[in-house]
Length: 327
Image: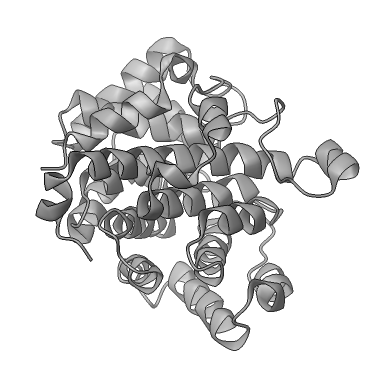
């Protein structure tokens, strides 16, 4: 594994990993959303390519919000910086539009009422879902090689909309991205995430169950049905279902980007978030070079379906700006 200093000394590698992470997230989001689309399944069965129908969802657009928050505060993240970003890029532009998660809508309503973090996340609907984990990768980028710092900043960012399992899921993903950025092995990347989750929590128990499935059924084909059945909840976006599934698919596909996209984005359930998390981890580990150039061009501009400001951002350029904070 590299040290943070070693990564920072190689600016090309640093840039390529940051871009790989954020573009990988966007690819997983768009391909996963396509993979669970009923009409697409009826015609093609499986999603294997980013067609013109592939669009960003709230996963990519909220990840861009997290990135923009970090850039605006020059990496010095505080709760006030998060609130100011949500006001500037969400409230002042009309709110959360189509396809946002319930905690995001709830957090915006709480901010309008004058409720601030952490209360805006505590007194909020479905605040244990994966809506913070899906957007948190930019923190892992700037905290490359520093998983504990990544987890600390993830808590600050996530508590505007989430609590408990929702925050722990975000901390796990941020820490894992931080390790992936410095060439951690698949085992080290997974372990960094597990280290951030209380074992005696719903998410902790679900992650342990997912890892046990991986131990007993060490191929994705053998584990496939069990990962669906044994982690199933009535709400497919809850963190203790989707995040353990994402980690299991990442582990069983050995961190390979293409295999991770195939299995994660065709998983069903919350496939856009599962794909986004896998894409961020694999993209950070293997760099932008593992992502087909046409896919990069397809996702580098978000659709703005959920957050209007996101349509003005360039995913590649935003990632390049984040890479400058690795020093």
